[in-house]
Image (cartoon, rainbow over all chains, first blue to last red; front, side):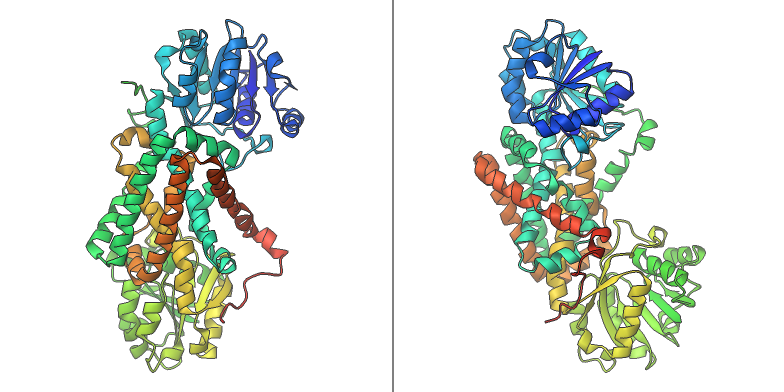
Length: 298
Length: 298
């Protein structure tokens, strides 16, 4: 199958690796505006060739858009304008409402399957591409009823080839959920990095930073070009998730300042319940459960 | 050397493993009030025998207190009352001001070396003990001028046997620094776990939780019996660190809500600087630097 990947960063590059290895792709063309990334992707063997957008849309079975979401918003209508009638288009962005609304009335809307694979690292660029990045993770497919069934089936098959499970929901539900489980943790880490760097004795602080700090702040290394547009496109739900979070922090602070032991104990014990929920995510454990991701669309 | 470890949890158990392996300890007695932990520690071979506090303080070269800090506060004066004149006492707690103040005027104050090894995991109990937990990490030694030089030298030698580097500072500086690099990240994670669990669609949220969320929230699994007294003993500096953090979160939220792109870009780019600082912590990189931890005490 002939695949075109638009945007050869961590996600696009990792998809290329696994789709080639699994035999899902027989030919991979890449579209990338940064010449150094384009060259690196060819030299690393991620793509067979680097081509222009126009050329990449010609005679392609599947077009995968893995650019920052502001770029996706710009180019998705252009892509739908130019594809062949049979071509399937999907995008890998972390926000979905704004992007899907922009092509809601496009005559080729049914060729498009909005998606979001919940996988990544804090690194970026084609050199950061990893094999098996998606293995065992969840891919969200949005508004499935608005895609043609063949296009939907092909994108589902692609995610299975990447080793993923699929969750189905509306674009609105996806943006709301990811505001809490993905975008909020990034904001938490960015603000933590800034708060700690705000302190005077930076040398002391960073000599002391241990595994706990590193783990909590890891996402603060994430790329500005990817995250700035995500936060802006999901600003309504980010406002909600950040306000809920700040409320919980203030509760925590007040319990500490007031040395309100029963309240502090309650807050920590309640937070500890996350252990049981996260351990459930262990794929070995999940195998034995009946509750593997199904259809959430209401 | 005869060592007594009071509190056989993750820290006490891990110290026992490495001090025995390195040959630093020839005999290890354990004092533990929870019978199941005491039995597990003996069965796992962490300690040679489980004894009463009174017996553990008899004829011991080095007493290591690795209990939650509220317990340390209770028993440290009792320990100093009962030790032999030659015995060295150190504690492994994460807060130091309140504990050191409580024995400031004790006639055996010079036998005591307040310390804090910056290492741990989110797990607890003797079963969670790990070999090499401390390797390459930093141990803080506080108020060194108040300890007898032989006692200081023995505790330094113990940390070197554990593979640690040592940072020296006052109890006040230690509580201030750890409020930012250790205690704040824990509060951040506890509040994040509570904020996300506050959401209605818990099933969706936890099916979607990916590596980024897990990393950021990992510390929220940490034990309430350990963390509640840490937050309370360090409440002044926790108030400061949480207020600084909430201020940065509010800045972040306002930039998102106002779609103030230049400000959001500035905040993310500033947070990204954490990458260079954290990468410096790589022991391989640090080896080539002249700036390895030295004496901070002013």
